[in-house]
Length: 80
Image 1: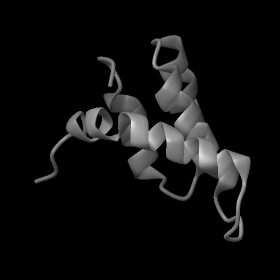
Image 2: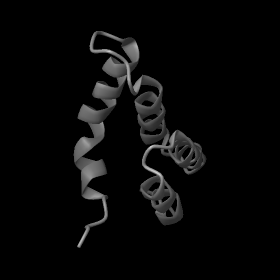
Image 3: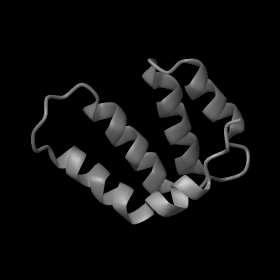
């Protein structure tokens, strides 16, 4: 994740049921040039709570996850 993400991630963790911090993080990621991760977050927010089934947004989110998951997971902070 680009440097400076920590306050945004802290806001997401502080309000796990609130979509607004996630969307703010997505906007910030776009501004930092991380469009794929920003799109992934927006897709997750827009599809949360949908019943199971085929939806182009969930399919796109899966594509992004499969393409970037190793890098994204490697960048996650460790929790002690």
